[in-house]
Length: 195
Image (cartoon, rainbow, N blue to C red; front, side, top):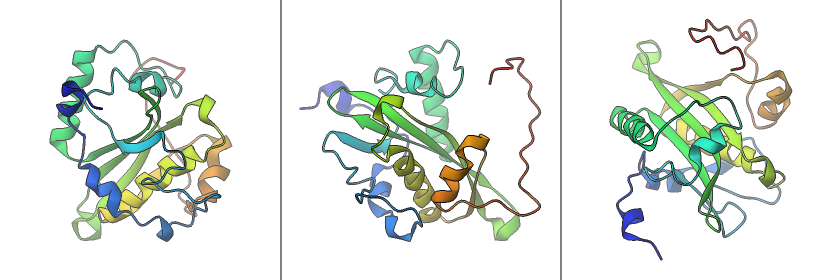
């Protein structure tokens, strides 16, 4: 049963895109097999971020990655509207329907280029799964979902930055180091050293 408020919620992007993804093209192997449409448990749902996810703990799951600061629901909704209007942000979440709670998330950002015949490059950002849901292949599931989505949307490549301890995980699902181009460099404008 859905409430009137849930029916009025907006998706960040068209959820039917997730039905078109071909998980069998991914080098990632799932045991047992799962996809974004059939995530392994009937109480799990993979879907686009919704405007009501502030109340479902979306920011709390992101806080397991890094400091998020104090963000009001109005600020969340304003940023959601900006991302939705831009059309280049595909924040995908995993919801525990039993608890009405976001337990995982990954962001696909599309960068429009002149190179590669005015191609689109994808960036994988902000991948997180709640620690208490480990062992269900959900980290792999959320990454493969947005990776397949980037391919479906016509991106010529997907890039990511990760901590050293996660390199083996990303390699296991098909990501490779680019010889001669495996450095990640940053110039920070904020003063928060713990990010």
